[in-house]
Image (cartoon, rainbow, N blue to C red):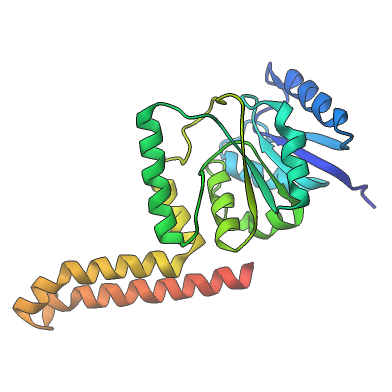
Length: 246
């Protein structure tokens, strides 16, 4: 029987990278100092980083799983992991970026909040800890071509799990919070397909009202109604599929 440990730290990167040994030493020093047994796993440098992150997470032995990368501070790991005593997940929030980055991140976050129906303090951070039993429930929803921190955080919040957001003392480098709009659309549809696709159906109907009023419900003027019905059906089917798999 495989022995369980306290924490599995999954590092995005290859163990052959120049900074890998330094990352391993920093993680070990931080978690040993807190008395937490642990393992350090690397995803490697595959073509699909999201898929590699999922595969390594499934193989992790820790009661808690941490996702990080070489740019993140290891000193906050004990605080993140110990936050899981009272929460299902904990996310390290870096300091503010430029005004433009903050505005763009806020707009993306508000858009997802409206579609998902859950408050999201921050989105797309690169350092998080989550209970292993919780992350395993939602790994199938994560994207394969890029890491899925935003997807996991939003899924946990929308399903009623508790997520702690802990500030970092310095700004960690990495991609801007929230990812791109394409990722956020995927996130909203997968996390809450009924709400997001019903919103799309409502927009289609509103755009089609003028033509339906002018031409009546015949021919091409009925297409908005048909399109809206298809979106509603797709949302209901997706919601059922997600409910079965989770």
